[in-house]
Amino acid sequence: MTYQAPDQTGKLAIVTGANSGTGKEAARKLAAAGARVIMAVRTVAKGDGARREILARHPGADVEVRRIDLADLATVEAFADSVVRDGWPVDILLNNAGVMFPPVRHETTDGFELQFGSNYLGPFALTIRLLPILLKATAPRVVTMSSGMAARGAIDFDDLNWTKSYNPTGAYARSKLADLLLSQQLARVATAQGWNLLSVGAHPGSSATGLADAGPRMGGKPSLLFRVAVKVTPTHSAEAGADPMLYAATAPDVVQGGYYGPRFNLVGGPVKANFTAKAKDQQVAERLWSESERLTGVRVAA
Image (cartoon, rainbow, N blue to C red; front, side, top):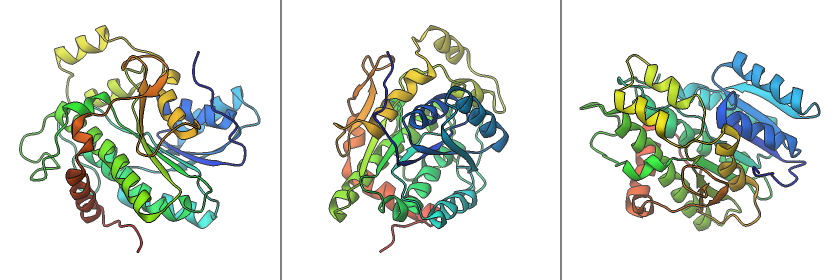
């Protein structure tokens, strides 16, 4: 039995990477619960296809597709500007989209290592740009998708973008630790500023999506270890993988700075998850926030 969100009528939700996998399932279930959903996707044609699938299952759903490429900060700015211009308060932001394990180093449009740029810097910039319209909502929530791999990550401020010795697993783990640190630091900022905003993290466990297939084929061949691991690791559906972030976005007992994942870590229904100790390092979180402002040129308005 998967998680069913409470009534979301009257709320506006933004879901990145909503054309497939956990993003599409989260968008579908939010729309089914009555939310108006903006499906923020890199490829509009794929987003339109996902929208048609959602409408086929839920004909009354209020879903629209808008383009964003988290590997291109200009499109992040354009997307955020369009949402702010609309003037509708954003109740839920799900930072879901990501890329995983490209075997060779790629760069974003802005020159960042692809996983760090797409999985972390893009969502950071999007979140900060949307803060003015998020704070117009009654009880906004920002949910940032991390991973169990965060525990294996390390923030190396001397080489955040892996220019010296690229490692696909290490780069992914770093990006997901950064996401978890972002969720924690935004929670601290919100509390210090007196904002009625919840910032929480989530992870999908081992979810059967295309994420683990697409990245390893970007310019190289997946390692034998990776191919074996994919086959033997227990998995659950994309819908089940979406449930922790959906729970974090809608459940009444969610707490500021919380972290949510599957009950049995890899699979199972959503529950409060355990943090890696690295995600609790406030000094690292504060420095990473400052570095992210410098790298993206995006800051919280005074």
